[in-house]
Length: 145
Image (cartoon, rainbow, N blue to C red; front, side):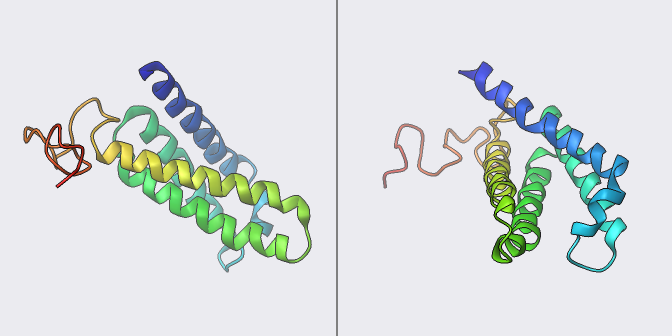
């Protein structure tokens, strides 16, 4: 099962890295979708976040905070870019909106995965050496008080 989890991590991270690079290569085509002033700077910042999160998830370095930022960005994109299009009658925006929502959920799950120490192959600071699960309760208690 570990091979599937590791493969899944890379299947998520590599497209984020590519999306990030695309923001720099094709920013002029994306700038019209930015719902706030500052257009191209937001394209570059989001490209930087996407690429950095992709690399972080692949390497496990700074993966928890960048996964959380990525999840927030993707959810914000779904709600501020795609949802207004859907509400305006563009049903072609439903797919991208749902995709970004699903990817946001995955990024938030990865954040929890890395915070618990599972993603780095070690234990988190929360449970290091204590014999406790990072999810509460002592070892073997399954979180039951």
